[in-house]
Amino acid sequence: MLEALKRLLSRQPGRSIWYEVEAWARAQGYEFRPAREASGFVVEGTLHARPWRLEWGPSQRDYIIGPELRVRIELDLPNGLQMLVLARPLMLQLERDAYQKFTDGAKTRIDTTSPEEMRWLAMLPHYAFDDRSALGGRVGAVGHPMPALERWLHGPLSRHIEQAGETLLAYPTPFVLIVSRGKLSLRIALPALSVPALQQALALFTLAAEQAVQAAEGRSGSGWPTTTQSA
Image (cartoon, rainbow, N blue to C red; front, side, top):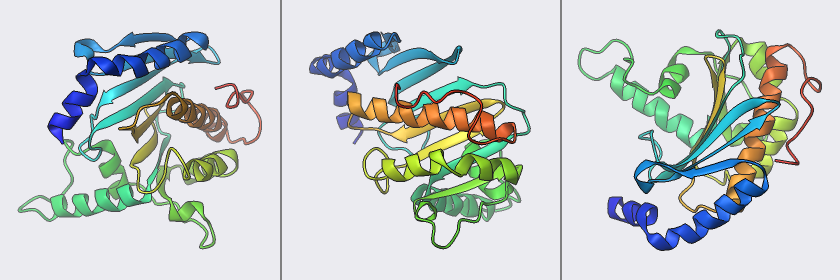
């Protein structure tokens, strides 16, 4: 697996798909540049005058094997706002890992070396999906305050995640949407890089950002103009 990943990230023919990515990015008015040591690339743009950063390269989380896509934006949301939506198979995996760490030897708590996502699953209240909810079969969610998480999940974001479940977020692809310390971040396992996949991920991220601002303000269906289609 490691050697295959090295070949995927370092092969010169890979410049062909990077050329397509660069052409797409520049056509949208985004900035494109290779990451250091040719281990991936970075695309940067703005959403309602706020800069966002997209990266593709080796995973920074143990729970994603192979290349991952990362996107983040600073939204100046309240620091106390904590919201996490993730693929249900990944949630179950992280909960099992947390339980094993908790019961390992003399440990009485999950330490700070554990990923934030794992700690939140152990600490924050879980969102109770309706038994008839198709989304509840795909994802899990935790957060505080709960009303904000409910507003974030209801409406356009839920429908978009369900639709992406047929393509970008197809079962059991690991993915995480997290609002923490005023920022929104998205992580998706993405070994098969393509421009359509980047477009879908950015559209999902854009909608999640817009809906997070509205959820934090106690509103839905208003606020930032919707730019998901253009993304």
